[in-house]
Length: 144
Image (cartoon, rainbow, N blue to C red; front, side, top):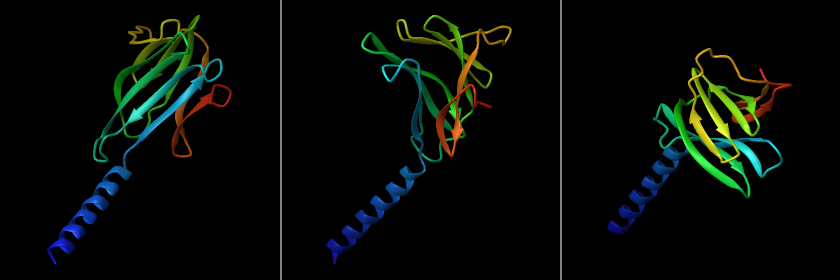
């Protein structure tokens, strides 16, 4: 009888763990610059479903030269659109909410950017948005 109770408790604990993890978001979506070897990738991670903020990172990648993951400011559980603008040669400005970032793929660096006038430095490339309930990159021709 004791073995049956122990097995039942383990089964209930495993089921509760699966339900807890089922509500978490762990996603990545990419803007392919020159094929899959050159890209900017937005990664969002939620440890527990009751967390109201998600960890966010940008991966700047230009393989085989460099690849670096940089944590940026956390975001809400509902993805706030992140617009991507051309800012120079292998340089992009990312705008999400009231925050700006610069991402470069020459040395694969990402940093906060104090953009005092709030104006984009160049043409809109596209945006990371929710599409059919999942994060996706949408090119500027069809971006919001």
